[in-house]
Amino acid sequence: MSLRLRPAARPLVPYLAIGEALVVVLVFGSSMVLVKAAVTHLGPVTVSALRYTLAALLLLPLALRRSGRAAFPAWLWTRLVLIGLSYYSEGSADGYSKAATAFQRAAEDPAWGAALDASGQEVLFLFLGNAYAKQAFFSEDDAAERQRLLAASQRAYEQAIARNANYPRSYNGLGGVFFQMARPLASNPDSCAWEWNLLDQAESAYTKALSLPAETKPPSGFVDLRAHMGLGRIHFWRGGCLDPAAWEQAQAEYTAAVAAYQDLDELDRSLLADQMAIAYTDLGHMAYFRALQPSTAADATAADPLLAEAILSYSQVITLAVQAGRDDLTKHAQQVMPYLLSAYCQSGQADAAHAVLDQFVSRTASPQASRAAILDQMQPATKKGCLDD
Image (cartoon, rainbow, N blue to C red; front, side, top):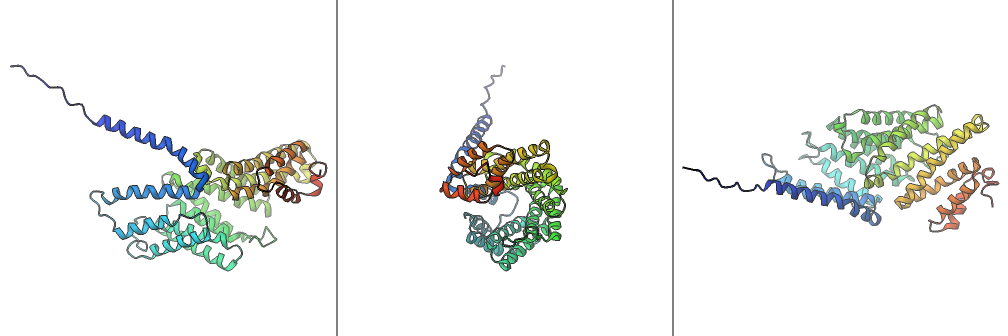
């Protein structure tokens, strides 16, 4: 008796796997094109909020159906979605205020936010701290309100750390709050009137964020980049006001931040362009003011490389502003332009200074007004024979 074997049915698993792979390729391959177009019209903050909120909504049904685990109550998910939607603002004080209100209500809810059951509350308190800190930026003219908001932000970050001592984003947030508490207000003519003890606390917080294990640092948090940026700013101001030797550490921290930034994709770079503008500005300042020191300025072989370094760093700020097309970065770039032009003039490159100035103002809404504003900020002695015609 012979056995006749039927060929086995071809399994569907390989086809399903291929189909899933094609979907992944389609999504990832088209996302950068769509995001690049969206950023131009909506701005990086709104696009980022849309991405995370849509992802949360897509994952919501899966989370509710997870086997073997009780689903979160519907009211909690509704509240969390609404909290996410509250970030749909374009960086306005009112938007951050509404976000803080929503987060605060969730944080006070004994069923979850105020509970100590280690179910992710540190993220909620991080968002709450962020919302208060963002509001504080709009209160520069009201010192009491600014202090209240920063104190509320500090408490929120400390609550996040109390719930998860290995959550590095909270330490970065806390470092940022201490930095803002320490700095002199814009209305203070003494740029070195810092609260140095608070700056020490900021340094400790940023250092703690850097020291935590890599697995605790979500890629979307840019933990190391932000910590290096915070430490760079601290050492920059210490070097400018207390001890010039601190600029060596500032340069090292900023260089590390720039290296981390260059490893990011295009969307993430657009989100952090303002941070890089600060890094390149301070790097430019450190090189430029070193070049102007009497002991250096008298020696062209020492001054010229520093001026070249300053020109390179300042030029990066202008490039960031042009690429981003954002008003805040354009304004920052216009404030940097007098230093860039001065570095060109100090190094005897009058033609380059003229070309850079003409190119920059041609992109502004009022070229003549922008030109006048930039030149007015330059020292007459620096402009003479270079940009005084």
